[in-house]
Image (cartoon, rainbow, N blue to C red; front, side, top):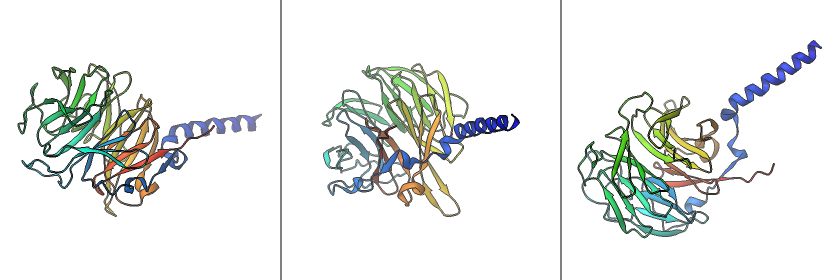
Length: 332
């Protein structure tokens, strides 16, 4: 009898331990394959820093990159002469479309909305732009080259997320520490946030995305966390990264939240990023160090997006390439 009770106790303890630590111990190899060839398929694509990624309505990848320009401060004033927005076939890597020359100074965030419009932020211009899929300008907010913290100015805006009704949220950004909501026509509605580390405060809100309930997820980079808010900007919850360092970006797809970080191992000077996966309540259920698990080369992921099949795409600004992790189909 005592042995049976002891055995049952051990079983329960094992289950609890497995549940508690499953997010740390679960092997990514059971769920994803790294597509090593995909990013090298097309010789037509020569990316600069791929800072913004999103998926269009045809399930293809759209990339915002800096071409030949590196990060500079103070910001340059000359517009980039090369095409900075490219659409890539998500299966073959073939270049489908490219445009965006002589428009931008320092590309950063990109979002494709439900009507296939392309939204971008430029931290050098202190502006956000809305284009149709062919590159025709539909909307522009902010004053070119002029920073500010009022209703019509930004200070190095980092990213954008668009609701189904066309209203949108801007994470603003490097210079400011706030999230702003605008109507579908670009009318200022409200904002929240200030510099700090308490709930609802930010230290570089660097990435932003929405779930199907219109909740907002913000990658609070220097606070190394993801914060979740409702559509009115009311704080709901957060996930604090205690594993590594800066939390760069966030993406929501198929009722799952994905994030990336960046850290340096001082002893070896290895530069690397983790990929995280959460449920909508920000419960972590998967993490993997891409350098150790797959790539064996230094990487620094700046943005992440996920297509309708669950395939992960990340923009590596060390190697200037987009990497692809394809989700396996697992039969139970």
